[in-house]
Length: 356
Image (tube, rainbow, N blue to C red):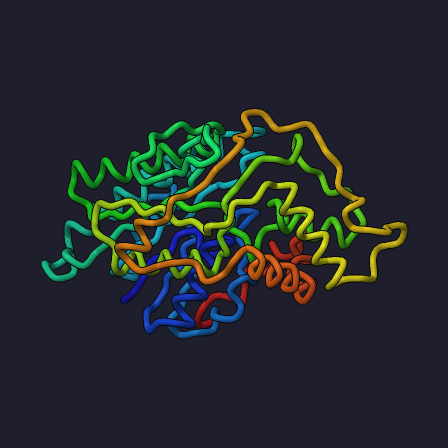
């Protein structure tokens, strides 16, 4: 099959593409605008493969999206392109509205037009897989409650509200037009190639630099942590085996308070990077509590029993195994994250695309 992946140069999208190229016989068309979070170096292991093609396209640009569909004739669409950082959405929500809502609308309309023109066999096999977040569900009240696929939406931030909107659009295009869609809502991802503004890589790199480790509020916000390569496997399973019109929640079965995550990172760095920056006796001494962000949800937790029972997917990594792999990856790949921190990663546009 040929799979069109939007946002394929991002953290989760690049993991999806690496998984497809390395573990299946399928081809991939990577459609990415290459905003600040898009990094083609995350795909350097697969970008030379003849089954990989890259298109630098903004999903809000209908003419260009139509050209990509005409030129590449995809069998499946996996839509991951999104602005995704909550803090950025609070500071400037307009880009989240544009990309996550308008971009999804454009993609749905182009996909619907394309799908309508396919022959009977290809039309029956076509799928539009929309990748979303558990943040659309808002806050969990009780300590034992879990998000299920039927949990009501109650987004708290401009980011989660924009993703909730895009989820509703996707389901409406299925109900109204019959477009064969699938929706997945995932918990917090972590792992290799994670953009350094997110919690786990931010803590690792700040600690290695001897900088403060800023923790919001009391650090007791609880998240369910999902290793990104487990998520990539789940997404491929859903788009190839999932039931049209269904939603699948994907979680890591690893609920951890943010402060516990930071302490775990510090303990691993004590073991794996014992030569600390000057003036640092223990990495944990760098932990600093800062004013909580507005509308910060207290707890997210996913019930991932549906995807396990219906499609046979369960995560392979525990938090303990996944976070160790993640910390070790950042220690072993300083060149990748140094280019991100100094901005030079945004200069590598030529020579990384497939076929060049």
